[in-house]
Image 1 (tube, rainbow, N blue to C red):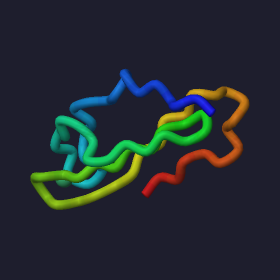
Image 2 (cartoon, rainbow, N blue to C red):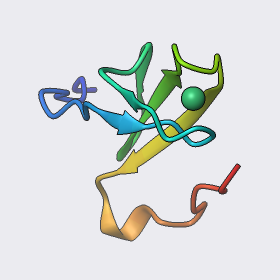
Image 3 (tube, rainbow, N blue to C red):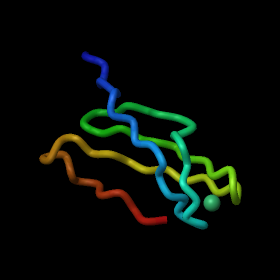
Length: 66
Ligand SMILES: [Zn+2]
């Protein structure tokens, strides 16, 4: 097992609810072929998860829009 290399952390992700940019994710959880990011908006308090998929063949469960 190799740890996922997460040196490509997304920043300034717009809040899914109010659109305010969020500097960095609260939590990063590497998975197989994908990385889950938990974002927490400081402007409105909304929290949401975004999943980055790195394996093109692994798109069996597309992320659901909240
Ligand atoms: Zn917000």
